[in-house]
Length: 216
Image 1: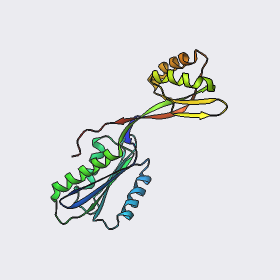
Image 2: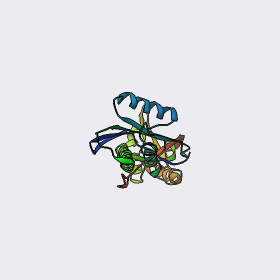
Image 3: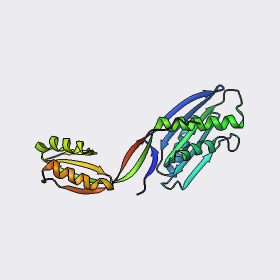
């Protein structure tokens, strides 16, 4: 499991340049098939648009890359959108920029800038996260101990990712590998040595990324 940057969720942004309307759609895509399916859905939604330019990157190693100018001059549309993804090292993501032509030609340079900025605006609207591999641990407690234990663990920087209320309470924590020792120390302190955290599988921890003001 390798850390990577991707989108927090779907996002949409719209702006106008020289009367041409640009609508950017960005969303996560875990596979090339998922990315292509989203592109097709946008083409159907905006069947009357002048262009539906697209790009996607898939794989934690950025192995799969694709860009489509959709009728715009070669290299002026799809490539700038792809470069917006690569500039932020974003993967497992797809961007579609829909253009409704406003009657004024932008020229090659204008198109490149417009599509690059549209893509950056779409990525900003979606939000970026850094996904890091982590380990899940399940801590089982009585109802009487839950509030106090959660308070101690929270002060140590650990909050449950999931809570199950049954005969007992199961708290699931996602812990980074280099925080494991601190987590078990916090559990011991919170439960006065009585609590045991059991391994519950591998997972991811998502850390929000604040983008720079570089929409192109």
